View 1 (tube, rainbow, N blue to C red):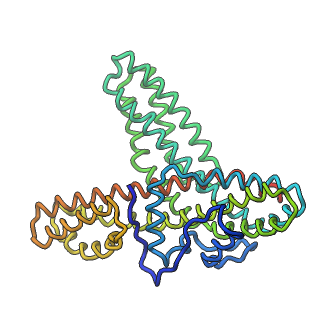
View 2: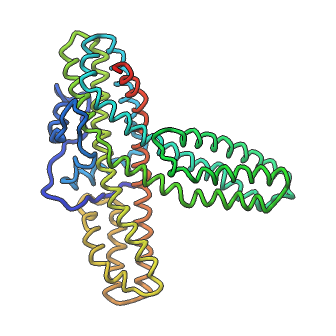
View 3: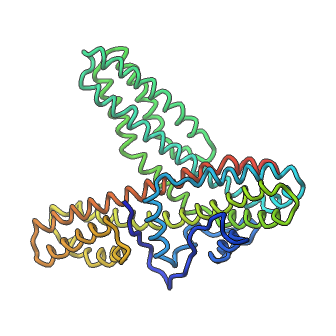
Length: 401
């Protein structure tokens, strides 16, 4: 379901255009970049601003973009950008194209490094997701029938192979230079879990299987959230506007050349889509930050709810004000439901009815938590799209090194 996403308090909103398409009038890329204020970037100098800086003054644009992205979970950005960069790589056999790209080598290098960091965090996140749903859950299920059931033993053997594969892939990612050693200390738990699972199967030892489950659970209970935090922090510090400007300038130079027009047009489409991806990431990062702060606040209130209601009563005026920006005339089903939860909780607090206060707070908390999860997974999806850009971007960079 779509949602209305808030943004941090800011100055007057500025107008930002709808995502551009290849069918617009001449120079659509230049139009998009100029209307975004050029981001204050010194082209070719490797300088830029953080991805979120573009839209902090425009909460309505942020809400619109997040709403659209939640509606379109299958929308692809990485493929057309990759195709455009591949077209640029083919054009670089000509001096004009090579010279144009060389002028922006620093911007390409910085973007490659940042995209690699995000790609590695995203890969670790996906591997732990696979660990949970293709390995851990099955082990927990079969532990109920182990060691007496032969079928359970066979299934656990299959899970051991899956765990070995996941472990090898995690070790490979953990060995990359963009991942700090202290960020993957949990790898030792994964290695011990694999040893314990093997021993449990060989020795038909229930205790070792229980230890396997305990070790895996310790990883899955803590690390996905930590990796997600690191990934979101990396997305927040992305300096993609510099690369968008660089690619737009390269396109302008190539447009006036006698090179392959089809390849130039393909590169143009890639630049347009990349500018849109940058726009979308900026909005999702800001929306995600809002929901994360709200989620932490609601967790703190929930922890004290059974002892007394003072924490909720004191926090409620601020919560109402912060979430009020969710409610406008472009509401949707989720917005209407969340607004209703807010009204019910407000009425219960005014009536000083403890049972209703607790009940309506939990409804409010659950619906807010669900929305935070959806925004989080949408941001992860866009980071995955960005990962698809990394390889073709690196290929272009290698040609000017």
